[in-house]
Amino acid sequence: MVTTLSAEQIARYKRDGYLSPLRIMSNDEATRRRRRFEALEASLGEGNDLPRPLRQYLRINAHVVLGMAVELARDPRILDAIEGVIGPNILVWGCEFFVKEANTPNVVSWHQDLTYWGLGETDHEVTAWLALSPATSESGCMRFVAGSHQSRIVRHNDTFADDNLLSRGQEIAVDVDEADAVHAALQPGEMSLHHGRMFHASGPNVSDDRRIGVAVRYLTTEVKQQVAARDYAMHVRGVDRERNFIGLAGPARDFEPSALALYEQILKDQSAALSEGAEQNLEFYEVEA
Ligand SMILES: O=C(O)CCC(=O)C(=O)O
Image 1 (tube, protein in one colour):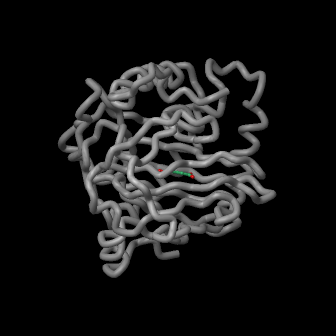
Image 2 (tube, rainbow, N blue to C red):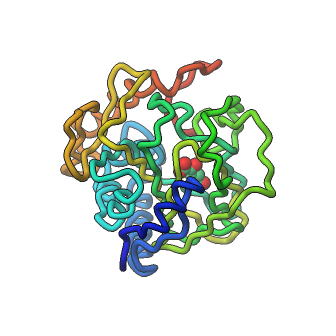
Image 3 (cartoon, rainbow, N blue to C red):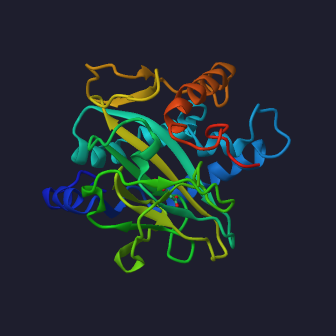
Protein backbone atom coordinates (compact mmCIF):
# COMPACT_ATOMS: atom_id res chain seq x y z
CA MET A 1 0.00 0.00 0.00
CA VAL A 2 1.56 3.33 -1.06
CA THR A 3 0.69 6.07 1.40
CA THR A 4 3.24 8.68 0.31
CA LEU A 5 1.31 11.33 -1.60
CA SER A 6 2.07 12.07 -5.23
CA ALA A 7 2.85 15.62 -6.40
CA GLU A 8 -0.60 15.67 -8.02
CA GLN A 9 -2.32 14.74 -4.72
CA ILE A 10 -0.37 17.37 -2.80
CA ALA A 11 -1.31 20.02 -5.38
CA ARG A 12 -4.96 18.93 -5.15
CA TYR A 13 -4.89 19.18 -1.34
CA LYS A 14 -3.43 22.69 -1.58
CA ARG A 15 -6.10 23.72 -4.07
CA ASP A 16 -9.15 22.05 -2.51
CA GLY A 17 -8.19 21.92 1.19
CA TYR A 18 -9.05 18.22 1.43
CA LEU A 19 -8.04 14.91 -0.07
CA SER A 20 -10.26 11.82 -0.04
CA PRO A 21 -10.34 8.86 -0.13
CA LEU A 22 -6.85 7.59 0.71
CA ARG A 23 -6.48 3.89 1.48
CA ILE A 24 -4.28 3.54 4.57
CA MET A 25 -4.96 -0.02 5.67
CA SER A 26 -7.04 -2.95 4.46
CA ASN A 27 -10.73 -3.20 5.23
CA ASP A 28 -9.90 -6.27 7.36
CA GLU A 29 -7.32 -4.42 9.46
CA ALA A 30 -9.70 -1.50 10.04
CA THR A 31 -12.43 -3.94 11.03
CA ARG A 32 -10.08 -5.64 13.51
CA ARG A 33 -9.32 -2.21 15.02
CA ARG A 34 -13.04 -1.50 15.18
CA ARG A 35 -13.58 -4.75 17.12
CA ARG A 36 -10.83 -3.77 19.56
CA PHE A 37 -12.44 -0.37 20.00
CA GLU A 38 -15.84 -1.96 20.61
CA ALA A 39 -14.37 -4.45 23.09
CA LEU A 40 -12.96 -1.49 25.01
CA GLU A 41 -16.37 0.21 24.97
CA ALA A 42 -17.96 -3.00 26.25
CA SER A 43 -15.45 -3.44 29.08
CA LEU A 44 -15.21 0.20 30.15
CA GLY A 45 -18.68 1.49 29.35
CA GLU A 46 -21.32 2.06 32.01
CA GLY A 47 -20.36 1.35 35.60
CA ASN A 48 -16.61 1.58 35.16
CA ASP A 49 -14.36 3.25 37.69
CA LEU A 50 -13.06 5.98 35.42
CA PRO A 51 -13.49 9.52 36.76
CA ARG A 52 -15.32 10.57 33.58
CA PRO A 53 -17.57 8.68 31.17
CA LEU A 54 -15.56 6.63 28.67
CA ARG A 55 -17.07 8.56 25.76
CA GLN A 56 -15.46 11.74 27.05
CA TYR A 57 -11.99 10.17 26.88
CA LEU A 58 -12.69 8.77 23.43
CA ARG A 59 -14.07 12.01 22.06
CA ILE A 60 -11.39 14.41 23.32
CA ASN A 61 -7.62 13.88 23.61
CA ALA A 62 -7.87 10.08 23.46
CA HIS A 63 -4.10 9.90 22.82
CA VAL A 64 -3.44 11.06 26.38
CA VAL A 65 -5.04 8.00 27.98
CA LEU A 66 -5.46 5.28 25.37
CA GLY A 67 -2.76 3.17 23.69
CA MET A 68 -5.00 2.35 20.72
CA ALA A 69 -5.30 6.05 19.91
CA VAL A 70 -1.52 6.59 20.15
CA GLU A 71 -0.93 3.62 17.85
CA LEU A 72 -3.18 5.15 15.20
CA ALA A 73 -1.80 8.66 15.64
CA ARG A 74 1.76 7.33 15.19
CA ASP A 75 0.92 4.99 12.30
CA PRO A 76 3.72 5.47 9.72
CA ARG A 77 1.28 5.00 6.84
CA ILE A 78 -0.78 7.95 8.05
CA LEU A 79 2.35 9.99 8.82
CA ASP A 80 3.68 9.44 5.29
CA ALA A 81 0.57 11.15 3.90
CA ILE A 82 0.69 13.89 6.54
CA GLU A 83 4.33 14.62 5.73
CA GLY A 84 3.31 15.25 2.13
CA VAL A 85 1.08 18.15 3.12
CA ILE A 86 2.75 19.72 6.17
CA GLY A 87 6.38 18.58 5.92
CA PRO A 88 8.66 16.37 8.02
CA ASN A 89 8.46 17.78 11.58
CA ILE A 90 5.17 16.57 12.96
CA LEU A 91 3.27 16.78 16.26
CA VAL A 92 -0.06 15.25 17.27
CA TRP A 93 -2.20 17.86 19.01
CA GLY A 94 -5.49 15.98 19.27
CA CYS A 95 -7.11 12.61 18.71
CA GLU A 96 -10.88 12.11 18.75
CA PHE A 97 -13.13 9.16 18.05
CA PHE A 98 -16.31 10.41 16.35
CA VAL A 99 -19.05 7.83 16.81
CA LYS A 100 -22.56 8.12 15.38
CA GLU A 101 -24.79 5.30 16.51
CA ALA A 102 -27.04 3.58 13.95
CA ASN A 103 -30.24 5.51 13.24
CA THR A 104 -29.47 8.54 15.40
CA PRO A 105 -29.92 12.26 14.67
CA ASN A 106 -26.50 13.56 15.75
CA VAL A 107 -24.89 15.94 13.29
CA VAL A 108 -21.85 18.13 13.03
CA SER A 109 -22.76 21.65 11.92
CA TRP A 110 -20.76 23.60 9.32
CA HIS A 111 -17.59 24.81 11.00
CA GLN A 112 -13.87 25.48 10.63
CA ASP A 113 -11.75 23.50 13.09
CA LEU A 114 -9.27 26.23 13.89
CA THR A 115 -11.96 28.58 15.21
CA TYR A 116 -11.58 27.70 18.88
CA TRP A 117 -8.23 25.98 19.18
CA GLY A 118 -6.11 29.04 19.94
CA LEU A 119 -3.64 28.06 17.22
CA GLY A 120 -4.35 30.99 14.92
CA GLU A 121 -5.24 30.67 11.23
CA THR A 122 -2.28 28.46 10.49
CA ASP A 123 -1.69 26.41 7.34
CA HIS A 124 0.68 24.20 9.33
CA GLU A 125 -2.05 21.87 10.55
CA VAL A 126 -4.08 19.06 9.02
CA THR A 127 -6.65 16.52 10.22
CA ALA A 128 -6.58 12.87 9.22
CA TRP A 129 -9.99 11.19 9.59
CA LEU A 130 -9.78 7.41 9.36
CA ALA A 131 -12.90 5.28 8.94
CA LEU A 132 -13.23 2.16 11.14
CA SER A 133 -16.73 1.45 9.77
CA PRO A 134 -18.43 2.62 6.57
CA ALA A 135 -18.81 6.41 6.45
CA THR A 136 -21.33 7.05 3.68
CA SER A 137 -23.89 9.75 2.86
CA GLU A 138 -26.40 7.52 4.65
CA SER A 139 -24.31 7.05 7.80
CA GLY A 140 -23.28 10.73 7.98
CA CYS A 141 -19.88 11.05 6.32
CA MET A 142 -18.17 14.43 6.28
CA ARG A 143 -19.04 17.04 3.67
CA PHE A 144 -16.47 19.55 2.45
CA VAL A 145 -16.68 22.79 0.46
CA ALA A 146 -13.68 22.59 -1.87
CA GLY A 147 -11.46 25.66 -1.70
CA SER A 148 -13.14 27.11 1.43
CA HIS A 149 -9.85 26.80 3.37
CA GLN A 150 -8.64 29.74 1.31
CA SER A 151 -10.95 32.04 3.26
CA ARG A 152 -9.98 33.29 6.70
CA ILE A 153 -11.74 32.06 9.82
CA VAL A 154 -15.31 33.33 9.51
CA ARG A 155 -17.66 34.19 12.37
CA HIS A 156 -19.24 31.21 14.15
CA ASN A 157 -22.34 31.21 16.36
CA ASP A 158 -22.68 28.88 19.34
CA THR A 159 -25.93 26.91 19.16
CA PHE A 160 -25.31 24.36 21.94
CA ALA A 161 -27.84 22.21 20.05
CA ASP A 162 -28.43 18.84 21.73
CA ASP A 163 -27.91 16.80 18.59
CA ASN A 164 -24.63 18.52 17.69
CA LEU A 165 -21.43 16.57 18.34
CA LEU A 166 -19.32 19.73 18.65
CA SER A 167 -18.59 21.15 22.11
CA ARG A 168 -20.33 24.49 21.48
CA GLY A 169 -22.57 23.37 18.64
CA GLN A 170 -20.66 26.04 16.80
CA GLU A 171 -21.75 26.87 13.30
CA ILE A 172 -20.52 29.15 10.57
CA ALA A 173 -22.55 32.38 10.57
CA VAL A 174 -22.65 32.65 6.76
CA ASP A 175 -24.90 30.44 4.62
CA VAL A 176 -23.19 27.44 3.11
CA ASP A 177 -24.77 26.28 -0.15
CA GLU A 178 -25.31 22.51 0.14
CA ALA A 179 -24.99 22.33 -3.64
CA ASP A 180 -21.28 23.13 -3.17
CA ALA A 181 -20.72 20.30 -0.69
CA VAL A 182 -18.72 17.20 -1.61
CA HIS A 183 -19.63 14.03 0.33
CA ALA A 184 -16.39 12.36 1.44
CA ALA A 185 -17.58 8.74 1.67
CA LEU A 186 -15.01 6.35 3.14
CA GLN A 187 -14.81 2.58 3.45
CA PRO A 188 -13.16 1.06 6.55
CA GLY A 189 -9.40 1.64 6.29
CA GLU A 190 -9.75 4.74 4.09
CA MET A 191 -9.04 8.23 5.35
CA SER A 192 -9.57 11.83 4.33
CA LEU A 193 -7.32 14.79 5.05
CA HIS A 194 -8.72 18.25 5.66
CA HIS A 195 -7.33 21.69 6.36
CA GLY A 196 -8.21 23.48 9.61
CA ARG A 197 -9.99 26.33 7.80
CA MET A 198 -12.04 23.96 5.61
CA PHE A 199 -15.83 24.48 5.85
CA HIS A 200 -17.08 21.03 6.80
CA ALA A 201 -20.07 19.30 8.38
CA SER A 202 -21.70 15.88 8.63
CA GLY A 203 -25.29 14.65 8.73
CA PRO A 204 -27.23 12.15 10.84
CA ASN A 205 -26.66 8.41 10.67
CA VAL A 206 -29.75 6.93 9.04
CA SER A 207 -28.05 3.60 8.38
CA ASP A 208 -28.30 0.40 10.45
CA ASP A 209 -24.60 0.35 11.36
CA ARG A 210 -22.52 2.54 13.64
CA ARG A 211 -20.34 5.17 11.97
CA ILE A 212 -16.96 5.15 13.72
CA GLY A 213 -14.05 7.34 12.71
CA VAL A 214 -10.93 8.63 14.37
CA ALA A 215 -9.73 12.18 13.73
CA VAL A 216 -6.08 12.95 14.43
CA ARG A 217 -5.00 16.60 14.48
CA TYR A 218 -1.44 17.06 13.23
CA LEU A 219 0.65 20.23 13.51
CA THR A 220 4.12 21.18 12.41
CA THR A 221 6.55 21.99 15.20
CA GLU A 222 6.35 25.71 14.25
CA VAL A 223 2.77 26.14 15.42
CA LYS A 224 2.21 27.96 18.71
CA GLN A 225 -0.67 28.11 21.15
CA GLN A 226 -1.76 31.76 21.09
CA VAL A 227 -4.56 31.89 23.65
CA ALA A 228 -4.01 29.35 26.42
CA ALA A 229 -0.97 29.80 28.67
CA ARG A 230 0.19 26.22 28.10
CA ASP A 231 -0.53 23.53 25.55
CA TYR A 232 0.52 19.94 24.88
CA ALA A 233 1.46 17.81 21.88
CA MET A 234 3.09 14.49 21.02
CA HIS A 235 6.17 14.57 18.78
CA VAL A 236 5.74 11.82 16.18
CA ARG A 237 8.15 12.50 13.28
CA GLY A 238 11.19 14.59 12.35
CA VAL A 239 12.77 17.04 14.79
CA ASP A 240 11.14 19.42 17.23
CA ARG A 241 13.54 22.34 17.51
CA GLU A 242 10.94 24.86 18.57
CA ARG A 243 9.47 22.97 21.53
CA ASN A 244 6.41 25.18 21.59
CA PHE A 245 4.32 22.52 23.35
CA ILE A 246 4.74 20.45 26.47
CA GLY A 247 5.65 16.98 25.20
CA LEU A 248 3.35 13.98 25.60
CA ALA A 249 4.65 10.42 25.46
CA GLY A 250 1.34 8.55 25.59
CA PRO A 251 0.29 6.25 28.43
CA ALA A 252 2.29 3.13 29.33
CA ARG A 253 -1.07 1.50 30.20
CA ASP A 254 -4.59 2.51 29.21
CA PHE A 255 -6.07 4.94 31.72
CA GLU A 256 -3.17 4.67 34.16
CA PRO A 257 -3.49 7.15 37.06
CA SER A 258 -0.75 9.50 35.82
CA ALA A 259 -2.43 9.68 32.38
CA LEU A 260 -5.81 10.42 33.97
CA ALA A 261 -4.25 13.23 36.03
CA LEU A 262 -2.52 14.64 32.95
CA TYR A 263 -5.81 14.43 31.05
CA GLU A 264 -7.47 16.69 33.64
CA GLN A 265 -4.59 19.16 33.54
CA ILE A 266 -4.73 19.37 29.74
CA LEU A 267 -8.49 19.95 29.72
CA LYS A 268 -8.04 22.75 32.20
CA ASP A 269 -5.22 24.38 30.26
CA GLN A 270 -6.83 23.99 26.83
CA SER A 271 -10.16 25.31 28.10
CA ALA A 272 -8.73 28.82 28.02
CA ALA A 273 -8.44 28.57 24.24
CA LEU A 274 -11.71 26.79 23.64
CA SER A 275 -13.74 29.09 25.88
CA GLU A 276 -12.54 32.30 24.29
CA GLY A 277 -15.55 34.37 23.27
CA ALA A 278 -18.11 31.86 24.56
CA GLU A 279 -21.29 33.47 25.91
CA GLN A 280 -21.96 30.55 28.18
CA ASN A 281 -19.72 29.20 30.87
CA LEU A 282 -18.79 25.76 29.66
CA GLU A 283 -17.41 22.75 31.36
CA PHE A 284 -14.90 22.55 28.62
CA TYR A 285 -14.70 19.57 26.40
CA GLU A 286 -17.40 18.11 28.60
CA VAL A 287 -19.22 15.45 26.61
CA GLU A 288 -22.96 15.20 27.21
CA ALA A 289 -24.03 12.30 29.40
O1 LIG B 1 -16.88 12.98 12.37
C1 LIG B 1 -17.54 13.91 11.95
O2 LIG B 1 -18.66 13.77 11.48
C2 LIG B 1 -16.99 15.31 11.99
C3 LIG B 1 -15.54 15.35 12.24
C4 LIG B 1 -14.97 16.73 12.18
O3 LIG B 1 -15.64 17.73 12.17
C5 LIG B 1 -13.52 16.84 12.19
O4 LIG B 1 -12.83 15.82 12.23
O5 LIG B 1 -13.01 17.97 12.11
